[in-house]
Figure (cartoon, rainbow, N blue to C red):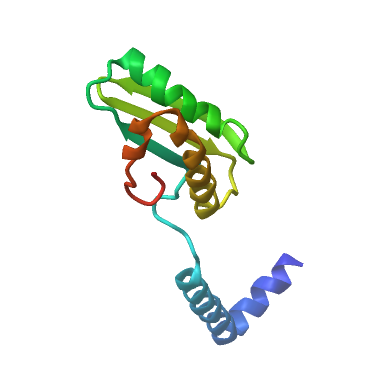
Length: 135
């Protein structure tokens, strides 16, 4: 069987060469259409709320700003995790959502719930919109 394949390939070398060339052209064509990123985005969907609180100690920022925001975000759909950081004059809350959640939906949900959290303190009004995934 193998001998017959080799004999055919030797006798019909132009046909084999044409077939190999056709497969190479098809491979180059499909390679150019392949949607692969050089560095895939493996981060989860996160929305970050940065709130300035001038004159607040870390304890005051945690009690008056960070905790109420975390509480307001607690019931969001597709919520995976909430992290926070309180420093002098700064409160930072990061809300992480499950994979597959639209970043626009996540931002909309956080923005709507941030309005609820505003009643807990005036400093929440200073929350700033940073880039794409941050509020």
